[in-house]
Amino acid sequence: MNPQAKLISTLSLLLGTTITISSNHWMMAWTGLEINTLAILPLISKPHHPRAIEAATKYFLVQAAASTLLLFSCTTNALFTGQWDITQLTHPISCLLLTTAISMKLGLVPFHFWFPEVLQGSPLTTGLLLATAMKFPPITLFLLTSPSLNYTLLTIMAIASAALGGWAGLNQTQIRKILAFSSISHLGWMTIIIIYNPKLTLITFYLYCTMTAAIFLTLKTTKSLKLSSIMAAWTKIPSLNAILMLALLSLAGLPPLTGFLPKWLIIQELTKQEMTSTATIIALLSLLGLFFYLRLAYCATITLPPNSANYMKQWQTNKPVNTLTTTFITLTITLLPLSPMIFSIF
Image (tube, rainbow, N blue to C red; front, top):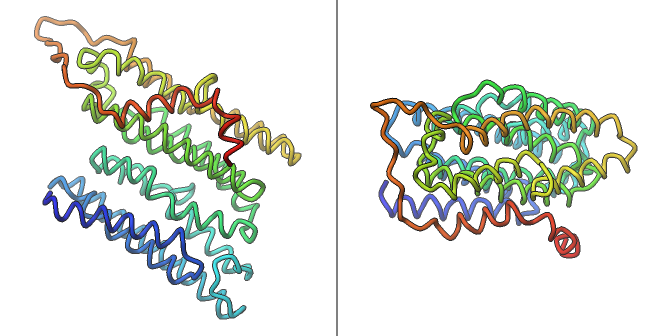
């Protein structure tokens, strides 16, 4: 891809995100979302491959439909209340339409079908953007409008997302699809607590982005896209592959790793709100995700491929691991002991 075009796309992504998260007016927020959608399309379709073009087309159609619904929602609200302010969303039809529109943009169940396909058709770097940065503006709109949202609908979608994210990831062999279903599952955890404690949703999102970035950057370093290729990648950088196992277990939410922190806090908050049954259900559903994270960790570190006569080990690289990758991996593994400091900041 032309470096100038890449720079324009990246700057447009930053611009669109900044406009959406800093705006008070619905039209400005919508404009930022549209800039984001148009900026990411060249990055998705960058590999000249039918799968990439298909992914870009699916992404464009879904995001265009979601943006139309969002525009219809805020226009309906303005028609009945005369308010274009994001925090003044009060009309029930507008609230319902907005919940649907943002759920489509995020990929919550039942609007999740596009996300695994788009992530599978994108390069790893673009996949990282789709799974983290592109979800920040819609999450921000959810936070700003959280008092007006339909909580029953949100709870149903959150539990369904946690369930489907776990179930659908069980039989996947493509790592990007597994990470897509992992993202859907984590979105369920973020959504279920958004009305009671929006700040906790934001902390969960930040920690999820950190852990996902560590895994995507590690996979990019070892050039692993399938379970079969991750089995043979241990000879390239053995230490990085061992740390990948810890990063995957952190994403699964096992103590004493970083990923345990948001799940612990969300279950604690749900229990405080006397939603013990909901907390129990979503905690049990996270066990489904734990299975495929364990399978990924097992393939990455414990399984050796068949050592047949025509099998050649990949060369061990002497190239040092990227500083960014090292930083994200360190945060992914060691943030739980620093949680008191994080609470004092937030």
